[in-house]
Amino acid sequence: ETGVTQTPRHLVMGMTNKKSLKCEQHLGHNAMYWYKQSAKKPLELMFVYNFKEQTENNSVPSRFSPECPNSSHLFLHLHTLQPEDSALYLCASSHDSNQPQHFGDGTRLSIL
Amino acid sequence: GIQVEQSPPDLILQEGANSTLRCNFSDSVNNLQWFHQNPWGQLINLFYIPSGTKQNGRLSATTVATERYSLLYISSSQTTDSGVYFCAESGGNNDMRFGAGTRLTVKP
Image 1 (cartoon, rainbow over the protein chains, first blue to last red):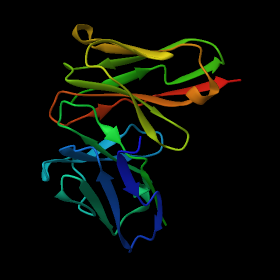
Image 2: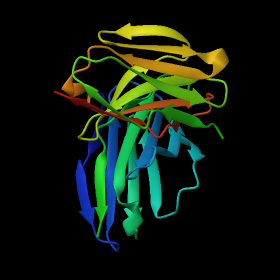
Image 3: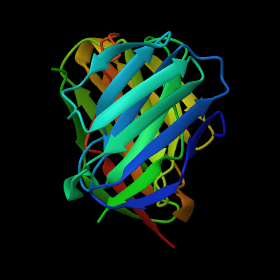
Image 4: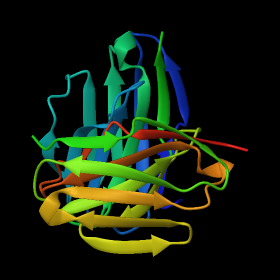
């Protein structure tokens, strides 16, 4: 599926760095999501945006800061991360909460 | 919260065999999807199936919402079917929850 694009595909950063993950969808959807997939764990929902408004923050630490400037773009700003934050971060979008979610290819993040 | 349980956790098949993967969920379904995650981490949408039966080639899925389960059938499995199969469901509040997945290995 190419409707949801995530960059970068891989990211290695130190604990003191600041970086951002980017997600862009070309499907005309109104809802966008960030998920975290750690090794041997189910995908965990982190944030949900509907029409650019954050509607869910699933008890995510403040070192993860989402931003949704418009319905097509979603960012995840990272700062002062911990080694346990190493994971695959997946972005998804859907027309609305009752419609199927379409996923990007993910960003594999490694914290040194 | 919504609980999603998948079984079996691991499955090894010989190429050409058929299999059934199961997903049980604890609450009423509003949005249920099956995904295949390939070895590169890409999550591919297989079915959106809050109820009823759908078929796509060698794959089909059935959800019985009143009994709170969904089944994914893979027929004539191929090595490219290997990966992890996830089901995910939500009650319609964007709170989509994923099961732990079934890791399928298809041997040639």
